[in-house]
Amino acid sequence: MISKQDIIKRFVGYVTVDTESDPESKTTPSTAKQWDLANALVEELKAIGMQDVSIDDKAYIMATLPSNVDHEVPTIGFISHFDTTPDFTGANVKPQIIETYDGKDIVLNEAENIVLSPDYFEDLLQYKGQTLITTDGTTLLGADDKAGITEIISAMEYLIQHPEIKHGKIRVGFTPDEEIGRGAHHFDVEKFGADWAYTMDGSQIGELEYENFNAAGAVVKVKGKIVHPGYAKGKMINSMYIATEFINSLPRMETPEHTEGYEGFFHLYSINGEVEETVLQYIIRDHDKEHFEARKEMMQKLTNELNTQYGREVVSIEIKDQYFNMKEKVEPVMHIVDIAEEAMKQLDIKPLIKAIRGGTDGSQLSYMGLPCPNIFAGGHNFHGRYEYVPVESMLKATEVICKIAELTALKK
Image (cartoon, rainbow, N blue to C red; front, side):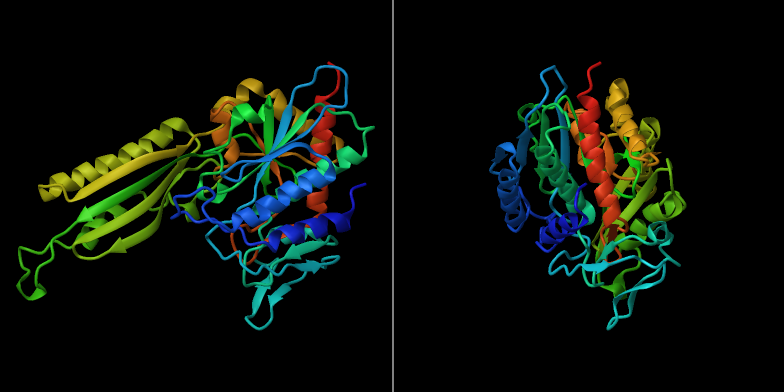
């Protein structure tokens, strides 16, 4: 069995290294501090006995576990990212270990009265009696996706130590900058050389995902005219009022806080405005490709209507596609999902097959020629102070990796 204490030690070692990425940076990785963990991971992969361990000039890490069977087996891969989100600080993470969770409130930070409560976060009650790792309430935890890295390296170490478990060639890959949408941008699929792969980047135990949002970003610029307010009649055009018209013209209930499941949305995440100019930044999301295109068209049509209304170009919009639904690329090779599902069932884990309300490196990699479903890593409440991960979920994810490797190597 994989040691619970080894999983905890490895995970805590990773999350206490600050690897926050930066969307404003033009470099890869976007922050120099990501190299700290990246270089440490390279040394660890070598130490446990992985082969062909490499790191390139952009901090992409790859390594190989050679096949131990004499028949032909597909090469599979497991991928995670080592950066953490810039949404909330990842500096000076101080993990707290809650043994045998009793189902009650967890005081993360007594001084600041920060409490992780099952009254609000109902998923906590699934893990009563288990060991939880939480934050101290002042940072995120970093289970997204250092739990995934923990599980992949632990699984590789276990397979190396237990050669009686038969498997084909396995490739592992760790990437920077996934949290800012660039994790797959410089991933060398040809060098990786896998027939398919799995990202270990999901949430609760049992999650298995091969659908995700189609995604685009939109920047809306509204031009106004500033004149002295005392003499402004008929002359001043306040860009903030026009921006408000734009905002209010989009469907109010089609926003993240009002949608779930397969429902798409428009998400206004930034406003920067003065009389002369206001800039709105949106993300557009939908699982259905036709609905996705319709959302983009709606924003363009609204732009045109406002310009017609004001008799000149007061609004401009730039829409850029970000990633697409991996379902289109995974469905033709559904056996790769079936293998993961069977691995979970054999380990008495109930598979939760659902669509990701977000994106993953796997979506981009699937369109780059590497079909790549997503498997649970175990964490909850990502990107904030209430993040936590059950250790037992990390253990199960590690076992799933080993079982997938074993099932893939079975002679057909």
